[in-house]
Length: 171
Ligand SMILES: [Cu+2]
Image 1 (cartoon, rainbow, N blue to C red):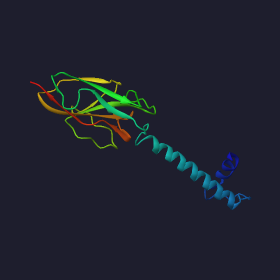
Image 2: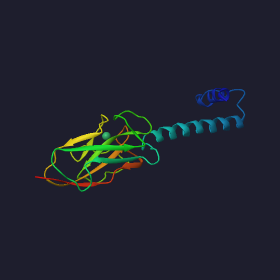
Image 3: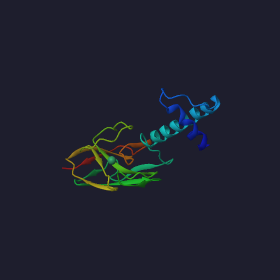
Image 4: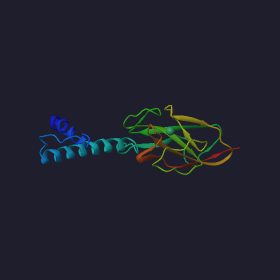
């Protein structure tokens, strides 16, 4: 199928002032070229679109806290261990299906799922592939929540999000 595309594509690109070729391609041949090129364009566009916005994830994937437990009273520094099932951990920037890196939300609501997760004291990234963190937290109640995200820090679709736990840090 490549031969007709090459042959017919060259003629419409001639300057308008150029004299018409003595043997114009058959109209059906031109229509076929248009359909083929449109198809190629749509295919490449769809391919580029599928790569960027959201990464898929395996069915049943889960992220969870190994420690601490919901409702636990702890002392600072607090060791937080991240659990992940049915997926793998990959560093930020490494695009591999079925993987992601951990993000820990500290006293923060879930950010928008279609955008890269913010990076600040309330949204911590573990882009090296770390599976635990040691947090210095002031005394009082704090909420923690884990979100896995892809190589571009964008949560998967559907998102892989832990329950939000509440801990109390002793004086
Ligand atoms: Cu990240």
